[in-house]
Structures are given as C-alpha cells and as structure tokens.
Length: 386
Image 1 (spheres, one colour):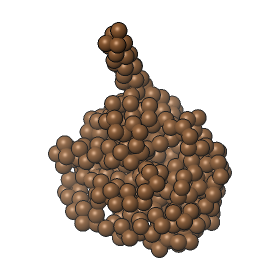
Image 2 (tube, one colour; image 1 turned 135 degrees about the vertical axis):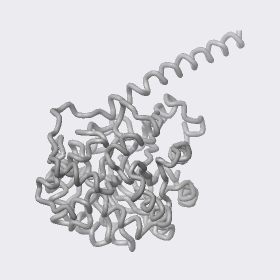
Image 3 (cartoon, one colour; image 1 turned 120 degrees about the vertical axis):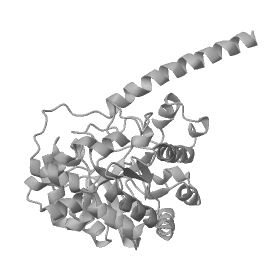
C-alpha cells in the first residue's frame, strides 16, 4: 500500500510539474506584453543618429524568465538578438528574487511570494525554491552561461577594465552587446550582510535596497510602514561603497531615499522610475529626490511603462526625460526600461529608436540624446566600477 501511495504521489508531482512547465511560458506571455498600438513613424534623422549611439539601459528583469538569452523569442522584451537589432551596447540584467502576491504600488507586505511557484514551474534547482540568495546566484549563473555560449556576442561587465576592453571591441564589432548584473531588493542577502561578498563574487555590481515590500534594510515606497533606512541598511550602504557596488534606490520610500542620500559618498542610481512632474504617483520621484541623486553624481533611469510616464509611446518617455533633465541636469538622466518586469511596454528593445526620435522632437541636441540614451551610463560605470 505504501509503495502504491508513493507511486501515486510521484505521478501527481510529475503531472503537476508538467502543468507548471506548460503554464510558465503563458504566464510570461501575459506578464511581459507589448501594448497594442499603431506602428510609430520614425524620422530618417533619428534612425541615422540611433545607429551611432552607444545605447545603455539600467533595468531589465529578463533572467527571471525561462528563455534562452541567445535565441530570439516571441515572448517578452529582451534577448541578445533583439539587443543587437536595437543597437543596445549595454543592458543591466536585474535579478528579482521575491514579489508579493496581489502586487500593487500602494501597500504590500513580505508574507507571500510569487517567485517560488515560478521557480518550480521553470524547473529551477530545488535549492532555489526556498532561498532568495540561491535564486540570485542561479540567475547570475544564467547570465554567465549565456555569455560563455555566445561566441563573443555577449560580454558580462564586472570592472572598469572589462568595460574599457568591451568598448574597444565594439568600435570594430557593432554586432556585440554587454550585460551588467544588478539585484532588485537586498532581501536576497537573507539578513546576513556578509552575503554581499558572495553576490559580489557572482558578479553583482548594482544592488537595490528594497523592492515591493519593506525589509530589514529600509522602507519601500510600496510597503506597509514606508519607513527609512535602518542601521543595518546604513551598514550595507557602507559595505557596498567599499566594494564599489552601485546603490540603486528604485522602489525606495521617500524616507529611505532621503536617509540613503545623507550617508552616500559615491554616486547613487535609481535604475527605473518615472517623475512626479509628468506622472504623479507613489512609484515616481519628486524634485527633491531628482536633485539629491544628481548631487551624488548619480543617474535616474526613466522607464517606459504606463505607471512611470502616464503614456504608451516614446513621446511620453521623452517628456519625462525632459522634465528630469530640467530638474537634475542632462548628465544625470538615463534609460531604465523595466523590460521583462511584468509590465506592458510600448515596444521591446528593438524599438528604442522611437525614444531617440521623440527626444529629437523635444528639442534635445544630438549630443544630449547621446548622453541620455547611454553615454551617461557608460561614463558612470567607467568611473565607479571596481
């Protein structure tokens, strides 16, 4: 009887696994949609300029999903073939380890987790099912393995020398791209700040303090308490600066942003956001935050999705960039798409020329377009990476 019951249990697990395996691609297809809209007409001047740019994007959650980075997919927003087609020189791959169920931008707690089921559905190693740290390390290995199989098409950047060498290559080889590893929420440290060293060794060079819920390091803009930076969070900021890991304040509460800026001695980024000046909600940055980020020498990455820019096209993105540049300065604004971040986007990474066109339409000079579309990111990394 026990053997029969055990056999039935195994069969049920296999059936459940098969169901999850089939459901995972459809889950992603629904999560990472493109917004249906008429095709955008882009000027020839914008197309010519775009081919000369070094485009860089501070945020994409692509490693979360069960796709081969080296293969062009019909799902989602980013893969290496599409990065190359969109002329993207550098893409930050930002690792998600936990999100709450019924996720919203107003108020969430840490008691539930969507990623456990996703990890099971995508057949991640069992060690990742119950460990946020292992989820981060697993996604880092996915990026490394993709680069190793890419025959030079994808380079992972971990240092200033890596970046300099890659950019020298790219001057002669336009068909290559690079990735930078980031972490969305330092709850992946599992309460132990010493795990920062482990993640650094795995290649992480940008770390966000919080995601959609408060943690032991600080308050989230979408948490319950929305508190400030804790003593433990201050300790982490110091450790990150010693390691030359960029601090990412995306999703942080106003108090956490203020507290972090007060202790930061190196440039700080907000990898993906909007601005209240063009789209007023709890997700986006006010003018004080924009000025504070600029004072550190850091960057604000403007996203493309509806909650970020209150629009569904490149013109809405350009308006947010115009506002951010007016407040923070042109040298402190960048792209932060949130591609593959379970948000509907107006285009995938092949469509970034639409932003180039919209920026020209807003009256930006070609030099300022070059800065926003990637030059500012590459400059900052060349100054701050270890």
